[in-house]
Length: 213
Image 1: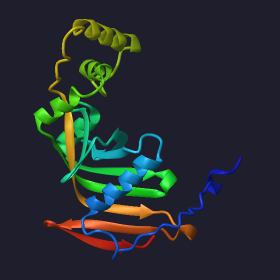
Image 2: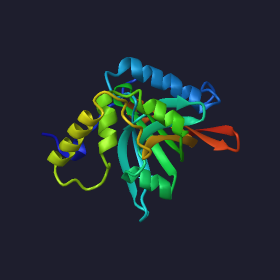
Image 3: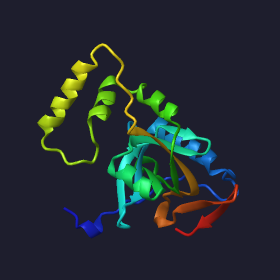
Image 4: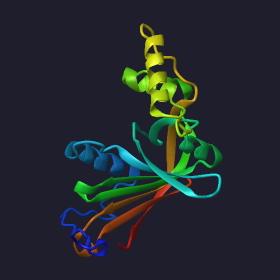
């Protein structure tokens, strides 16, 4: 077995992009890359690492799923009382990172998170599989759990309670829109000569900068 220090990948993608050819709006480039990821990656192309800052100033990162590309940013859904929800309530500065390893591409996003409209959250909640709705309804996400049996019992009770009716939309659950102020695109290249372009928002305009690998 190789030593940890010896583990490395030689990136071999021939594709490259440059500052002049890239679109002025990074959302256009993201949509192109994301479309390619959906076509070529079997699952979880919409998985993204969400970074938040807790009340003690420490970063916390976990994976969530992108559910909508909005003209103003990126939307995901969660329990507002969860750890991530509490972090965003205290400090709404967040980061998102997409890694599409098979494409040798990465996108890093920095921005601010805002709750989406309640009706939009409610509409999405009821579009989810029924079991997912019940799970969200009964789980106090991130809170200590006495045992798995307790949560299973809550799930079964709710399943019976709402057998022939719509699952009530829980007010503690909903979406966030992350409005970016910076988006960096990374493309792996041979000999570690990677391509990197960062877009920085200045007022209402995006400024493009080529970065060294």
